[in-house]
Length: 103
Image (spheres, rainbow, N blue to C red):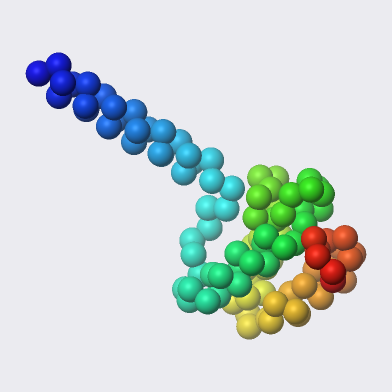
């Protein structure tokens, strides 16, 4: 009987920890409808720099500005913009330092 309670306690603790990790996810927006669009979104948000954190990508930054910029990237993708157009738009707004790589 003790073994059942121990097993149940371990399972509950694991579920709580997994739930807590999900609660602190940085980007909690739903995936884009097309897996190719989602991959483009992930690629772009990892190569664009958070203007507040400077050393973190938009994908990795928890600040509100990064969340707003991730939303902008998402909206641009859904509107049909190419990756190059999105990069160019962001660089025109925030400067060439916005990209981790060459702009």
